[in-house]
Image (cartoon, rainbow, N blue to C red):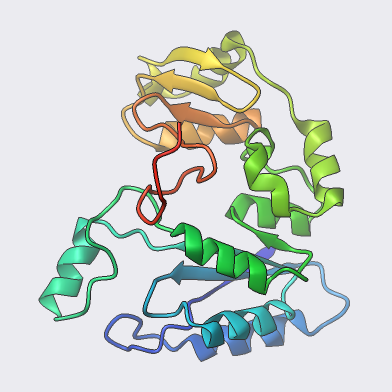
Length: 241
């Protein structure tokens, strides 16, 4: 069992009506027992410039992380619906535009990594953190995306390395046979990083394939850019290839 405690540190009740202190207190309570079968994760999200990215916010999150078995951080899904909420409630908008992926500006990520430089259990992806606390390989197969792993413990890298296998197109098609939503699936390319596919109507079949294969599966029409895998380009100097 894995317990994830969602914590933002956002104090504005117009944006985050449920106080973060509840999550912080709950995490400390559940992490206290030394002999326990479950594991705890500080689910630090969403990080938003101007709301919870001050030095004091980062320091508070680091202190709280010492009570968890692992910490994962990520940004805001600033989609149209959220932007409309901000506007309707007279809130200052954090970004000039919306995006289909989470936004983690480059400078903010760098500050987080600097703050957590002494941490041995900080992750960019939730599945990486969940797998780590149970000494299992990442069920989403992120090991192929090497730049994601530069903050992972060496012990976890070894676990993921041993499990990492590049599937064949036949393996992917075989795994997809149980999915009616994948009738039009086409395997476009396969590399050590990921399999590129087309023909999936929604994201959910792609998630299923990743879990079934333990390997990254990307939609051809929504590429994952290097160095910010699965994140929006907003807040970065230039798009990556």
